[in-house]
Image 1 (cartoon, chains in turn purple, green):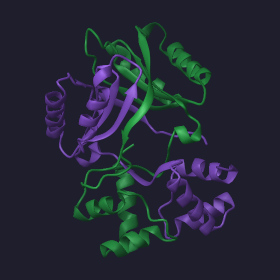
Image 2 (cartoon, chains in turn red, cyan; image 1 turned 90 degrees about the vertical axis):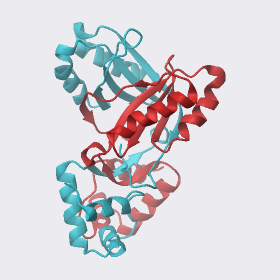
Image 3 (tube, one colour; image 1 turned 60 degrees about the vertical axis):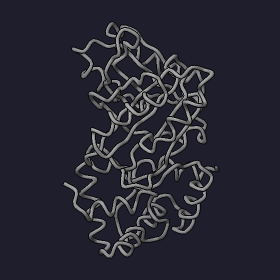
Length: 147
Length: 163
């Protein structure tokens, strides 16, 4: 990752224009050629520096549902619990965290009812209590990390 | 409300925008629409909040942000909205939510994600949040992510991609 890549990452976290030739517009702002920007963007996606490039949708605005949930996975069952939980297509992200509640995951479903169904199924298959922490209020969401 | 065509556009962009000089034209051709229609609909979804933004999502670790902490705070319910908004405005906080407590073992109701390249940097951010909360900070903890167990970049069903 060189300085040009960093410039691209920082600029594209702020947004991307909706116009006929958006790469050309961004490239001009950054002093690059259109094809150079596209090639570098492709490389950043291929090597995993960027996990995604495109529209980020707000699930709840579209009728879907999201929640954050956690379990206390006993150390000796950690891998088994990981496999059970990750096997649910409704589980979008899952992180190990340093706490007694050591596994935290996001459940995303098309309807609110499916959230509870998924939690019930996870509890049944793991034998663990799922701590459901749906948001009461969102104050801010915008992940922007300077490269 | 979103209609069938909007949903087709959402599905067509699940994996991201095409990396071709005219990406909206490419989506339009795929769906049998005009590029103007695709652009108008994307702009409308952005205005309505169905699209949070169009842009790039970096991998924290690849950019050197190895310390990703979920800071959790016990804040009195009467002041949480006011304080949550203030914490959310701190430029290093990427997500900030009010979530339910699970008493007695989980007293925390304010969640704020912070990211740093060093432990020192994150400690400083946590201190800034603590200073902002002042006497309303009745207890806190920081849960660092130690491993990504699953992260789906996009879905194959028609479920939406989100932050």
